[in-house]
Image (cartoon, rainbow, N blue to C red; front, side, top):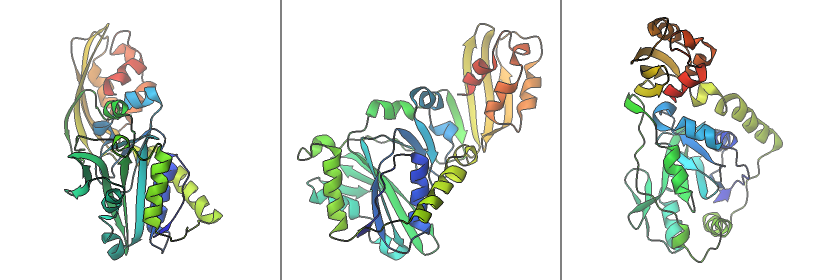
Length: 312
């Protein structure tokens, strides 16, 4: 199969690149690529319900949204991603391509359920798909030596998620492939062997400067924007509680497309003005708008950043 080389590790650029493979080419191609530490949520998910946003911010982990469905995943440079795009009927014949390739490398891999590849009863890969006119793309992960502690923390949502209209991620027992493939000393060696199997002697499909410029523009104007990453989040209902010197503050709220649709405060906190006034003024606003409000009148001595931490 022909292939496209992608050395980028920028998650927003790589999401735009995948979209271009789907919509901007005529050939059937595959691509092996990597992301710097990042969480990638599915098209129909709420970032607020799926991602530990404070953990990502504290650890410099980026957040992106892809054009396919499915659940949230954590990527780092111990993970190898793959994409296959082409005419739909042809790509459908490649659903088992990655499992077949892993078997040729010596793993007892099997495709199970709707979109998983399992080895010895543990998940090493998940994939998703997208149709665009007569073309289809499937893309997924291959866990080589992923930091599983960080993966768990990044996808552990603090607080209490009550309900979400989005698609919740299914947590599975996962496994890295490195201990199972001792013949490869590094991910680079594994990647090269996998690439040779998939290419099977076919040539590279090179992208032109104008095509790469188009991808860069989409990365900046679509995939890197608040509207795409946060604003597409479906309505999600939460209850979150935190203790401060002024007392305990509990927020009951709903978010849709990243803005408050409902908000109420309760607790034993002390303030000189009713907190309902602040809540009413935040309806229809982004969560981050709290940073612009004089919240100390409602919660004695509390800074806007401290109140914002209740929602993160």
